[in-house]
Every structure is written in C-alpha cells, then in structure tokens.
Amino acid sequence: MSATANPSTEPDVDSPSKEERLKGFLLSKAQDGELYFKSKFIAEEVGLSPKEIGALMVKLKDSASELTIEKWSYTSATTWRIEPA
Image (cartoon, rainbow, N blue to C red; front, side, top):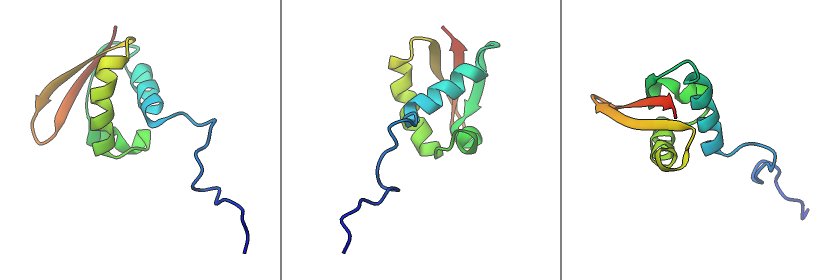
C-alpha cells in the first residue's frame, strides 16, 4: 500500500478561492457600470453552482469594498445589482 496523498483532494494553494473567483468576475463585468444578473445565468462562466453564488453574494455584500452589491428583486430567483463602489 502506498502512503501518497491523492492530489485531487488537496487544495491548490495557487488557485483563487471561490469567493475570489466570483469577486474577480463581478469586478470585470461591472467595470463599465452597473450589472444585473441571476446566479443561474453566470454559474457556468464562474464555475460555481447557483446556490454557491447566492451564498457568496451575501458574504461579498459585506466584504467587497470595491463593489456595491444589492439584492434587487426575487422572481423565480434572486436578481443581484452590482456596480463599482
């Protein structure tokens, strides 16, 4: 038996966290002004599930000083409004 670790289960120190990935995506998309989106429509682009995006948006709302994040409306899914701070 081998005592080597499975590389697929170890976190990659160089890769950005899910929160950093989402924040970077939002910063790039909102650089020209405000942006409205639903998590389910950006999930594939960001590489996260809509549920993960929703949870991270709540965190980013308080921690991302470069962005103004507002829960805009709820019709079949939350719409978020983002603009540069």
